[in-house]
Length: 236
Image 1 (tube, rainbow, N blue to C red):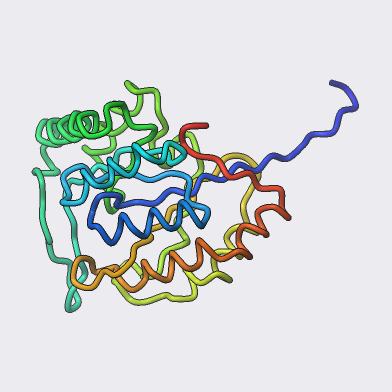
Image 2: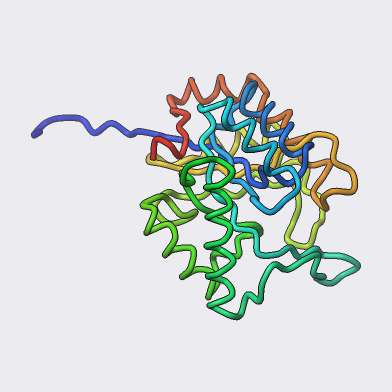
């Protein structure tokens, strides 16, 4: 309408990766959802606590749950990258498609429905051939794929790419700085909360710091002050 004033709308989805990895990760996601600002999570269907995560999700319908494609993990140890595990040959398009589709079917078995969104462990869906397979799955389901329809903010992470600690990035002040810099529109903020992890993950103590930051009342207060609406992938 001529003469109308454009209103800048901020919609923020806070998505917790690694749902189902361990009981400690599940507990951290639950706390950050119930007491903090987490609205969505992505499930690692082949991990040991996946069934428990699905049970929690069934009792908490406000938590949107997507599929965290889990094709392997690489850790930076003693100055070099080492393979923790691989679920398929990621250079083989047929093997990648078979594994991704198998994980989608397992998600359906666990939750009784389709995922609300798709992303991947260690962002493997940003490289081929996984990128095309993931895009095909998301397109077929008509759900968002991380980084495609909705902007992705990955700055809330407590390590460098080589595993060096960056505690200030996941402090409450660090999270507040990210929130204050958000552009209008839809944004996904990635996070990795967890509680009580020791040997289960190379990203362990940082998960507890994330929980505290995500649950800090100053963060929710700042979202209100800036009129940033918390949304989930079920809304997207």
